Image (cartoon, rainbow, N blue to C red; front, side):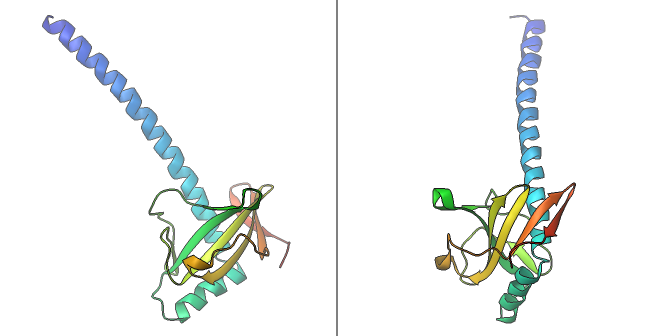
Length: 155
């Protein structure tokens, strides 16, 4: 094969690899966008009275800030809990809390249950062996345009 054809094949190969890389980068960017939206929801939720009180209780009990927060989605129709964030290390938090995936002995556990355009939620101080499929909603958050808002609902 002459030098011209070698270069042509090399460039063609780079084009194929490059397009695969672009598709991978697009999926990664999309996944990061979804995770960022989830983080916005958690930030808004932890400003609500009950969840913010639970965060304060965990910190007052001697845990260093930021308090660990574990977020699950309840799927009672399937009798399962599903982690809200994908990946092992969500980068979601602030000075008062951090979202963790690992099971910890004393944490804020937030349960979400999907409703139309949002989530019903309840938050508790619990350990990894106290997870529950049952719970009474403490509030509702719905998406209104680009932001999450609390709406009147169960208390």
